[in-house]
Length: 472
Image 1 (cartoon, rainbow, N blue to C red):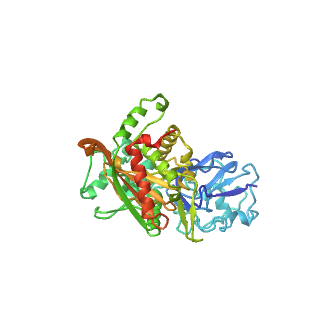
Image 2 (image 1 turned 90 degrees about the horizontal axis):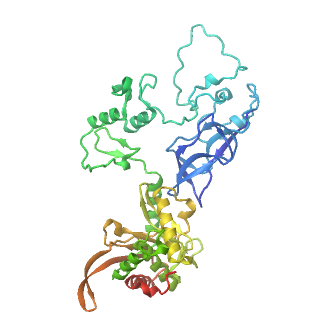
Image 3 (image 1 turned 45 degrees about the vertical axis):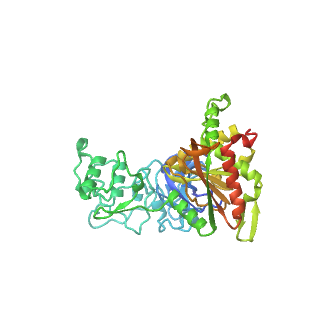
């Protein structure tokens, strides 16, 4: 007989509690093998592909794309014995049909509704897959009416691989592709009220967007090429003046981390300006060096090396506060975090044991880390265990700021814009490359003197890179 095995969302990181379903790679009826990618999830500010721990046939998908699922919640059911003989009515074990197996997924449905012929459409009604051996319903006095839509109490059909049709539309009467239906649902547009302009009267994305624009006032601000991705998945108010977007994924986790940090660690920030003309000359030289031809050399690379050297000279700044034991944990290593602005939001992956790397290897790690972050491929392990972070706000033309610590870290260094400014050099005012540095630190761990010394050490190295003696 068929063997239905639920696969529960695992903890793919340290202390993961939930994840968002991004995209299913399989659909009901598909055959899968062990380690085949079945779903892409987003958690800890990264995208992760989950492999199947079982071989068999996909029976049900238990979570729709975009849903937030707690760790330990079943997300898919796989039939690991698809060739087995179907059980007779009433013979199926209770453990395979009990609602206790799939907590929170809906009320228990009869086993005849749960079984479906292999290869049947994902959204087919359960009655269409009733085994031949199951008794037919008693004849009715009159021909039965068309099958009504499932009631809210009924168990939902298996999730299809395409977005759901908007609840306000009659899917049998409206011609529209699944992506267009999804767009209409997200924007609150009733497809029944639209006249399609596509071939054969099919409703297009342009038809849906035109309906939205005609019902809403003009946006306050519009920039060329602005597609407003931050409004995706939002609900527009009746008057079109506001859009409510659920706080999910990267934005929610960033907010939670920043609030926890701001209200847990007493922040102190010290700021200084420094002449980095020699650093800019070094960068120019390295960009023409054969040994660095395979990597991108940026100011962030030299700042990272300068910060590593400063921490090695003042190792007591590499620490964490343990509230549970009321202890200071000094860390004899440097996991250097690099704050990266990505289309999915702010992420801060870290380079493990950065203190062991020479300048070239550090450049390689830095390039690869930021590239994965921008592609949304940062792994959960890269997001944990950081000791100190660099955030380069200068890329946005900002002089300086007061950054907030990553939870569990002792310090964060903000690097401002590097610009030519009047500077007293050898007794004369000259145009020099200058930047401002701001170091925020946890005042429970780091006194003002220590924080100031570390910042001044970084500034001095950027002022004269040869001060680092050996960059390798």
